[in-house]
Length: 160
Image 1: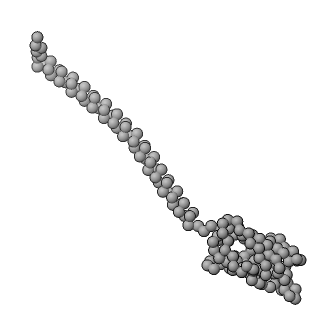
Image 2: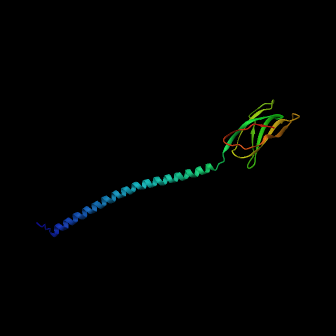
Image 3: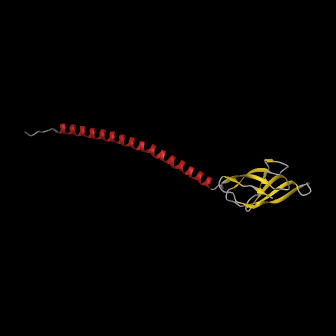
């Protein structure tokens, strides 16, 4: 049996279909916007992480550019008087000195410590109080004359 609908009924069905389609479209649009908004927080977090990563990379590069240092320490002996200071004359850059930490007037032995650039070469001079006549400050070349500390802890004993 065939079903016949009047124009009014057809118009009513059309309006219902249009309302349902519009409602479904609005619901779908809202859910898609929610999904995209959840992505935007992820994108924002990823951008923040990328920025932090770049900052850390820059800090690492700056730290890697720094020269390493070594704590150089040891004793000074066989001087003709009481050791006062030891000087490290760098081949490039500033010269450094270290005061004597513990010294004795006889047998003229002392200990020192100083931070030097690791891998650099230094000439060594020792100052002592005394000399052949026991008067004034004298200087001698350290033996060994050249030192090139490596690592972070380097022991080297010197004589005149």
